[in-house]
Length: 573
Image 1 (cartoon, one colour):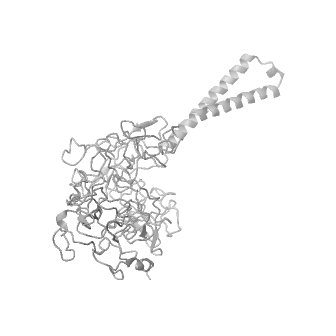
Image 2: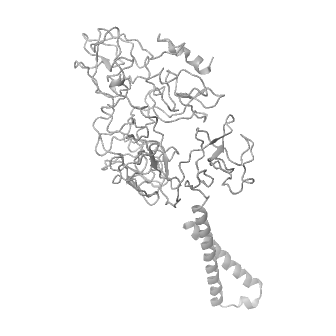
């Protein structure tokens, strides 16, 4: 508003000064004009200036409210009336702008198809009567492809505006501790040069041996997230670019206090998750940012509170719950919804041999205290953090399984007992009530925590009626896993789990929750392997189990020197 007052002041000064100048120039009669006449003329100038400002303000608001004819809703079966903002093909290729002839020469231009919603943008459209919306791509090897925009509707209603929200699914952390990123399990899927990663199970762009079967404990899977399965210097991925086989990824710096969405203190003071939205749906501002609200809750003033150059909810000052300053100038701060605390954080693991266990159990089944992995007394050994960089070893004595044994174990502090197995419970036993596992072909039994739709939009809570009002509520669908959360679900027997989104232009979209059974692991699905001819769980007298691959790739024999072949494999020599 201050800007408009300055404009008004300028216009008033301009009008009154102009009038006075006219009086001085155009005759003595005007010079003798009374103060009353001058005041009347200036009052007229004020009215004129206000009217001018009202016109400008109305025009500005209309431009802001309607920048484009954009809506994700469409009614025609072929999507010819679609005017949404999806700009990626169903194969994952980025769309090229309709006015761009760089990647592919074409005639589907705004001039040739003036009423088809084309323009200086790269949103999917159907200008030429095809069976579905499509776009040209930025990939020189793929001219065009169809887009996934959901199903048409019978009645496209207008929705209200909702706040923006985080794009990272809860429960997934970008934090990692190992210097080489071998323990990284985040969702970065682009190389340091901006090239999209290809899925680890995909052999289309580049043939390779870094598959989930060959590297079962490296975090690979039916996804394209950056990983370091083979002891490289940093996380990397194969790319979708045929001319660039692979490249490293930028995932930030490692940390020593990696904790996921799990927390134990009732006030959330130990919470180190990635929720960055208040309970009312307002985006948090970064703790190092003083732009929206000036404050003293900074990383320098509260060095051990988990603050930093991020906008994740925290409780640095002993409040009753985690909170954050907001990006809304009218709302200084608010509390955040991060779920309930638990008493078993970090004890969760999912692989049957517990090779992914990162808990704090430090005694064997026989009650012996574990020896630190960096110590060589009372037992000398080779299971060190340097020799097994991605196994969770370190300057601690927590039970681990670095070498594909039948269960977690540790060297002991008892000189007469070299090592022993540890009891860390069963897989998923301490993982809380949610799991990404589901088996129904339509995902009606999915109870995971994915809360981002396939379009990239964050899901709307099932208990919310804004920005989209609906009838899929916990009360109407009591057994469908709905609740005061925004996790993807399939309450009405659609083809897959889905959710309403917080994007007012995207009412709902399907979610990418993987294939049925893909994330299901139980102790009965893997048999206990034989170790040195032993079939019982009794430990042997010495710890000499070699590191094994499930299916060692050709040229990478299990001789402890498999990294020699890393560069040849990646360079395709």
